[in-house]
Amino acid sequence: MNFIFSRLWRYLNIYFLKPFDAVNDTLTSYLIYKVHKLKNNYLELGSGDGMFSFIMAGGKFPFYFDRYIDVALNKKDIFDTHTKEIKIKNTIKLIRPFLSIDAKKNHVKKIKEIGFSKNSFHSKLENIKLKKKNKFDLIFFYTAHGLTDLKKSILGAKKHLKKNGKILILVFDDFVKKNFICYKMSKKNFFPTFFNKIDNGRYKEISNYSKTLKGWKNFFEKNGFKIQKISSGLSGTAWKVYDVQTRPILHFLVRLFNFFPSILRIAFKLIWMIILYPVILLFFLFYSNIYFNNNKNCYHVFEIRKK
Image 1 (tube, one colour):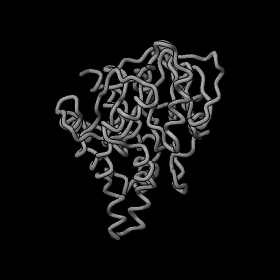
Image 2 (image 1 turned 90 degrees about the horizontal axis):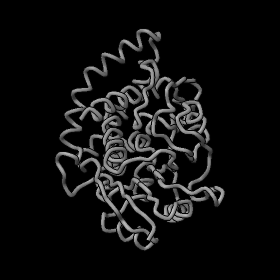
Image 3 (image 1 turned 90 degrees about the vertical axis):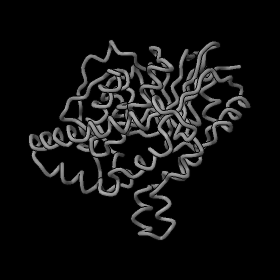
Image 4 (image 1 turned 45 degrees about the horizontal axis):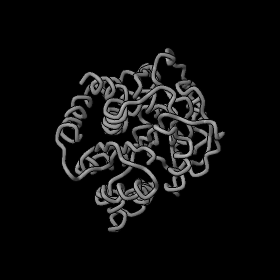
């Protein structure tokens, strides 16, 4: 339980203006780190900016730093920029990846800046160019945004797996497609431009990366894997909240918090977090499938090995 309490607060520190991101990342961290177990020197694919894995492994960001202090509101993807430098200490003792790979150059820049991953580089996950001798006991395949061919990328990852090694991969359940509120509102012509902008292509991207549980089992087995373990993420009901949360007013909130001088911004952030923390903790307890398991899930973690 201490893991959940601490990670929820640390993720909230980074994603405080989208508080339910902290819930989702806390649950994913618990499943990956505690249930399936990470080993040192793993290969991480689709690592994003490295913040998720750093916190998962026990890393702490200073309170003054978060994703919303370093954004470009004029871009389609407001997080597609990294200019704010951040110095992190004491990463050596953590379980951390030997190599992190992401499809965004700016993400790799932030990974290097944090210094959690021992090595990192930019590459499309469908065409990873590693030396044949690079083999790993563990590959963590995170939800890869921008992925166009999962089969090609998973088979590519398989080539770099040791004989008895395993892949931990996060995949979406087909049920999640029924719970995209922003996408549905845009299609119903209810302020379509507004809700389509909020969705930002997420429905199409995640839909291409989702199957029923049976469908995923067949997919992995047909591609030469045997399934060792499956864990489930948030309930489908939770996704309805997660999909919307503060995104409709996120730009306004970013401008508001960044309007204040640094000391005031941190003070307001702390107040905001103290108010929201009990709410998202209750949300986690009720809607994570650790405590109230059901058949309507948002995503699964598959632990798979070579046949």
